[in-house]
Length: 108
Image (tube, rainbow, N blue to C red; front, side):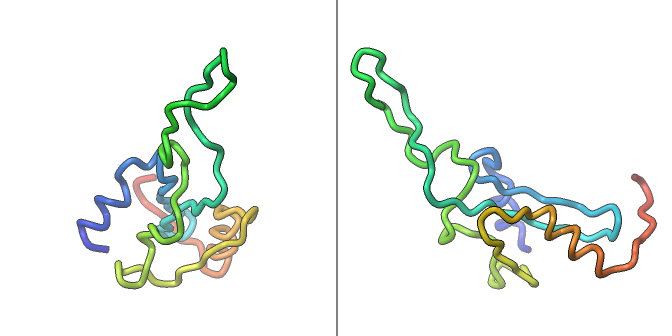
């Protein structure tokens, strides 16, 4: 992954849901993006009208749209897997790690 993509990946992670998991068991690094679909609308509830005002759009979703994904072969990623809704990325990491022998990782 080039430096520009790395910088984008780690920008506003609380909004995008992008994060990295490092496996101390195998020494492998997994990059994760949460792809979202239907999201709750965010804004301010006007107590007198009961209506949502000042919508914040796609801010604070904790996920991205699939067309905004940085995890692509063009950006240097390999072995890319898109999980079905409801399937844990951590369960997928455990499944993948189980295919490799454990390593002793120093500096833990």
